[in-house]
Length: 47
Image (cartoon, rainbow, N blue to C red; front, top):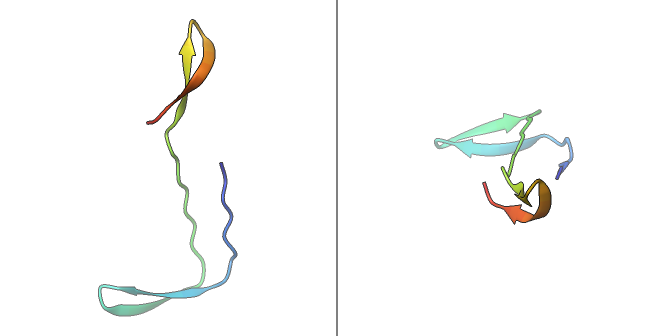
């Protein structure tokens, strides 16, 4: 599953300071896997 967010710059408050962010990269993995019975996928499990 991939989610792409527009490349617009944005501002964020970090520790009370206003930070202007022009470029950021983030990878998120949900660590789900297919449940298998004798090697045949038959559902999914979390983590």
